[in-house]
Length: 211
Image (cartoon, rainbow, N blue to C red; front, side, top):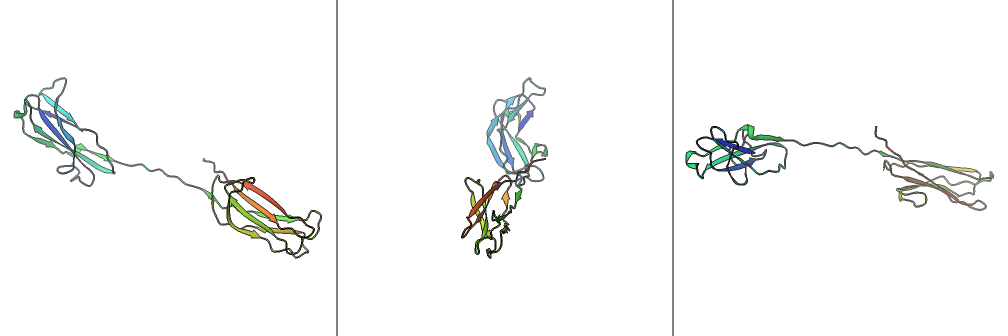
């Protein structure tokens, strides 16, 4: 804020500044109270000289820490060479106020709920051993060479009854995963007499493209 004074001879003395935050203003101004801004500031003559002679004083900067209307008040105290020519005065007009606003930022995070299905078949059409099963398990955040975090239960097919040549299983995962995160589904067949066990890993991720 800058306070300007004029009158009989260059005004001399000091100006004390006050600031009212939005909780301290009255009628959209700062007529009383508030917080003093720094120490009183000695007036300086305006250059080039004006008619009538005038002087000014600048406050130090303040930091506004809340939104709303803030207001300055300047109080002139005569002093120095020409101080006797003046009386004290103040300025707390609404024009000494300013509005502090804030901005907002919006963002969103998309997720997806991964699910998978798997099947196992005998290569030569032989029945799968009774009691053998196929399971499907979800891992999050790794790769097929270095699995991520085990997530959720294992989804298992009904046990083979000794006549089927194929078993199938589907997941029912409800756990959401952030876009861009890789997931691995590992299908494991238990095997049995005359039929070897087997496993398969599949890795995938979902990428969101901004329009």
